[in-house]
Length: 264
Ligand SMILES: CC(=O)[C@@H](O)[C@H](O)COP(=O)(O)O
Image (tube, rainbow, N blue to C red; front, side):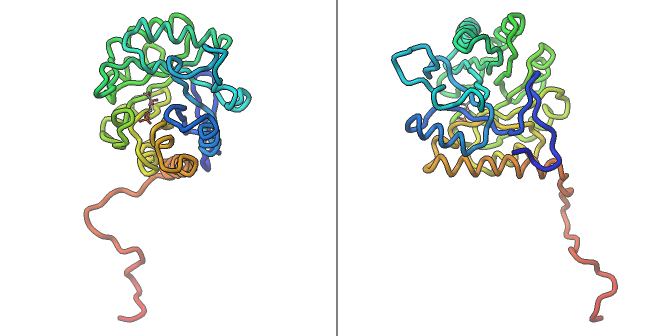
């Protein structure tokens, strides 16, 4: 559902009414995956091509059997890739498996402890993929200069982390997100580190165009209920952003007029 008075989210040539993007890892089984994603209202669902079967192994259950193609835009991602070469190869495999689908989420990770992006390798991969006709949504650190570089190269969305993947630490650096947002002309989608609904709402209140999350929903005690909470948080945060918050002030100002009191 779109927030009141909102425009659709535009990524490349595609438009979406939901601003919540979800992952498919860490669920108990395919049934729980399908139910939580359904409840989230997400239209873009990201899949780790190196880890999840979307046709690589025809003898195993295929995730796409529970995510109808007429309802969801599948966003193949390069999770598990640590070099530009691996990431490019993975995107090309995804394009073959998905009949020429060219929208991908690029992530090239630096190490296992932080799962921070290796931005040098990510820049190389993004350049190759864009030249090869891919529409690249790029996972990156919350560095405004890098965000600008990725946009200038032609990435269709820039996806700064809120906190390390799977950490649930929430929005660690709202000031950097603000700097990224004020210069961006492509969608800025927070990706990774959201822990609960208020984190998602904060990202949207800052003016982010959307949020991608996985662990906060899949790892919740009740993933379907958390998916519902996230859907509402994204919409509430977006509406609050569009509505324009009041300025923060150090001192009080009375909520009702002080003139003309009934009792002197
Ligand atoms: C960058 C990446 O891989 C994300 O898609 C990640 O999976 C989401 O991070 P969380 O699991 O912290 O939401």
